[in-house]
Image (cartoon, rainbow, N blue to C red; front, side, top):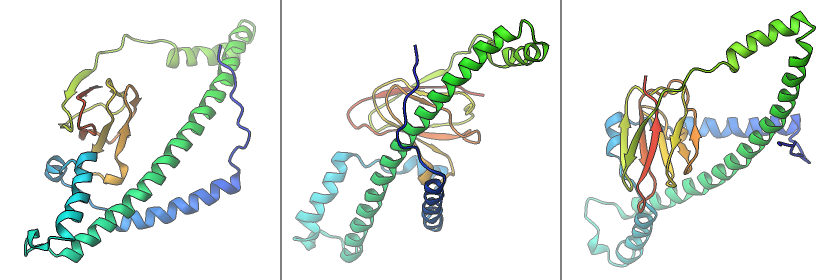
Length: 234
């Protein structure tokens, strides 16, 4: 039986306001730097794995810094070094934001869990009261019709995705869950959307995407394991 999870130090209204201010500041910066990719750019974008990241670092050390003759004349070395620093700065902030995302996701899940326990208690009591209270009975009839009368679920379409593979899908039903059915992590991006809004989906988990995400690009972030996912189409 589910029990309430105690939150010893809930976020205060003032703290929420501080978070909103910081988020707004980040959004101003990210919006100014936003890169809107075309469908072709998204599809052709190189997937840089952990191994490839190491390769970039080794090339910089072994060639760019010490054997400059290897560098094409069309490539500016200071710009290359600046690109490395820029990427490192982006990754540092990405790691912090991802950690914060994971932390607040846990808080959301706990809050939903606790509220669902209370909601279930209300529903259980309402079914008893409905026997003698017409108002409650009428309300429960509406709720039953909306939430507790189910039609058989239609099957989704399962797609296999190779190691570091990329699949573009058009016409998905974003109102139904997008499920990662293997252990690999998947990246989901709305075609034409901001890379900052990319959804990362851990293995054996699911997510309901924004309703406007009809055309998406799915990337397998693992370079060693194939994956698969289930998606519903319109």
